[in-house]
Length: 591
Ligand SMILES: [Fe+2]
Image 1 (spheres, helix red, strand yellow):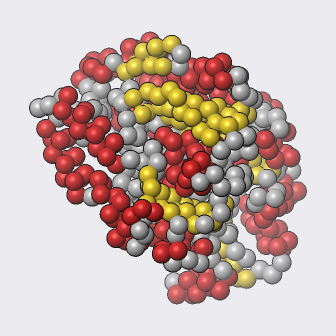
Image 2 (cartoon, rainbow, N blue to C red):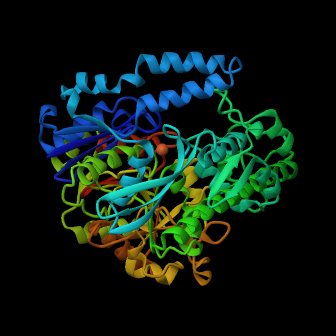
Image 3 (spheres, helix red, strand yellow):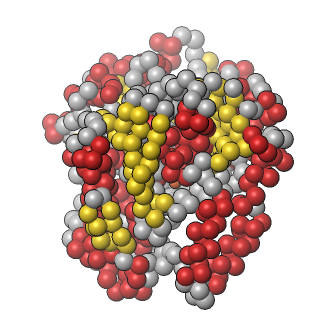
């Protein structure tokens, strides 16, 4: 039995293939098309999935789409009609968009893959999210919470699952949405929606939640985990270009200049920004104001999600929680849920956003609909494409690259650890690429986290990121407790996927300056030996040499590009940056 799950036409498109309920392949389209957040039909990801399974499209038993287009269209029509004629432009855009393509998903799938119409199924958006978490989790029974921008009508769903059954019995409907609330602030703070949400989260610790009372004017708690937005402050329901209104600006002041440089007195002024501006002090104060806004919306979001989690814990009496939806990528909120909601364990799979809908759609059909054997736990994220040594050699040769082939793992790891110790920034390309937005040691850029200057060095050489964006640490499970405040790390799957922010142990903060955020926290990746043996060994080897078994891990890409897929993507990135070395399998490339 082969089931293909697809998500597309909204955010990140993706494809996932299950064989007898087990994942054979899962990938987001952007990795192949090289278009960041590609939301088109995932032709290339599907092609990859089919090749990995060694089957032709006609051999697919079912193709499942992650949401119901007609219900979604119904929501869009209803919304624009309510605000008509102000929403005329939205109406026109929606018509062109939806009548053209999005509505006829079934026909598109049928035409492109040749799959019979009665073999093409649809799941509801939030059910896809729910299934993506629960059927990958180790739980036989769990509470379910999905929170995102919006699916068809729902923006939040709550319920529970037992055995192969998921029941979502409470939902919050559009336009009342935590995801869209956070996105409106993301836009106000000068970042791109669906892209800059991480930046808001990273910026927050540089401020104080001084404006929390004002943010609570835009959203009201309704009790029982419910909430509603004060729609006067927003415009996403009647505009395609803006998400907040004039009243929002009256409340919080003028919006931050998009993509303007961010620095505060505590962040310092990065050298890659060039010379310090004449009005440095005033600029710092202005940025601190926006950091205060970021801190306020982050705090309110945490409170809203905590309300829901606490309510679910109270009403279900269960110990375990499964979470999905874009808001489940808010690793700071996740840290608080684990600590404060009453749930003992949380499961989130790495692609918690809309890309993960493809996974959930397929899992739902196998587990809940067809009652197949329960799918296994997803303990790692390595479901993408991989390249053999011969393929890597071909690609690299074609690009005119030269490399040293290192025989023996010990030798390779020793050489890499040595270079990390010397302060090199190293591209690390191994095995299958990761599922979801985080690089987890298969397509990563690695550096020494014990160096005070390393954050600035990585930014100057490769990333050019704002100084408020922390770099993440990777640490072997058995070493985690010595450096981070997380007990029993292997049990906390979100930490395997960099979806949990926890405090760095107070006495270790000065040992790990490059990965400790300004508030003393770290968005760690717990590395489990059985799931990533080579990466685990590399960190241990670095630990033997340096005394600290932790590496700095950031995604292998240039700013604004998707994470690399092929060895040639990796080589191109290596050459276009000031990275010191590149490792592809056991090939070592230097400059
Ligand atoms: Fe979603």
